[in-house]
Image 1 (cartoon, rainbow, N blue to C red):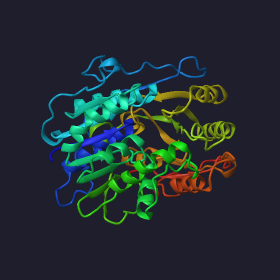
Image 2: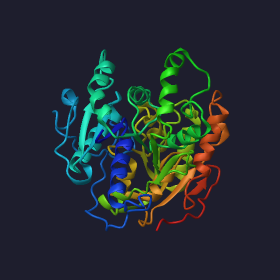
Image 3: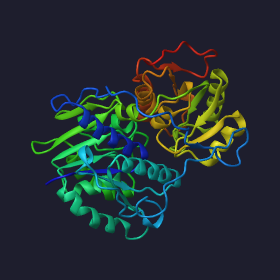
Length: 418
C-alpha cells in the first residue's frame, strides 16, 4: 500500500488538507505537533475576492475574481469528473485530493477556486461528480475503489458524511487523519471518545427511515474511524478537543495560510460574519436579523460575510433592513481575511471562525469578538443538545476573543492578536 488519499466535500476541508500537508512538511519528524509557522510572510496582499449579491440595496457590487477556465484541467462544467492537476513534486507527491463535489452552486464555486489553488501549489486534484444524477454513486465507488485500496493513509474532512462513511466501509485504511470541518470536529472527538454513534450536533435524536437503513453503514464506518492495533487515527484541528483514547491530536495553526497570504490591509470599520443557523433550523429568522442589525449598529459594521449555505432570501432581507453590504466569499474566510482588506474588528456568531480567525490573523492587529446565541433566539424544536453545543463553541473560543451580547450597548474592550 502506498500513497495518501484525501476526500473533501467543502472548501474549508480542502484548505485544511493543504494546511495538514504543510504542517507535516515543515515540522520535524519527531515533533510534528509543533507550530511550523516560522517562515516570513510571502507575497503581497491580494484584492478581496468577494462578490455582492445582485439586486440588493445599500451595497456596493464588486467584480468576482475570475473562475478557472472550463475544461478538465480546471475541474468545472462537464469536464470536472476525473480532473487532475500537474505532476506533484516534493511534499505533495503521493497525495491525491478527491473532491466529492456537492450540488449547491456556492459550494461548487468555492471548491473550484480552492481546487485550482491546490493545483497551483503542486497537488494532484481529482474532481469527482459524486452526486451527479442517477448512477453517480455506483460510478464513484467503482472509480475510487482502486485508489482507496492502494492508499496507506486516508484523510477525511467530514467523518459525518454518508459518502465518506460508505467509502470507509469498503476499505479500512492503516492510517487515518481527520482534518477540521468546522465545529463538527469537536462533536466527532467527543462522540468517538464516548463510543456513541456519529450524529451531527444540530440533528434531533430520533431516527427516520433513512437513518435506519444506513445504520449498518454508519456503525461500520464508526469502527473504521476509531484507532486499533492496526490503525492509527490523527485529528488535525485548530479547535479545543480532548484526544479520544488511542488518537493523536495535531495542532492546526494556519501556518500555510499565514505564509502564503498577507498581511492584510485593515479598514476602519467592522465586519460581521454570517452563519447558517437559520438554514439548519436552529435560530429564528426574525431574531437573527434583529441581532445582526443590533451588532452592526453597535460596532459600526459595514460588511456582512455570508456563509456559503445562507439563503438569498435571508441575505436580501439583511441587506434591506440593516444597510450592510453582503459579500459572498469565493474562498474560505480565513484566506479572505488574510488576503484583505478586512475590518479592524470582526464580529461572529458561535462558529468555527472564533477559533480559526485568531490563528489566521495572528500579528495583524485585527480584533475578533463572538456574539453568544440568546436562548430566546432558538426555535422551539431545537434540542437541549444543540443549545449546549452552541454555548460550548462560544465558551471555548480563544482567550483573546471577546464574548458579546446584543443587549450590551457599548462594546467591551477587545484584545489584539499578536
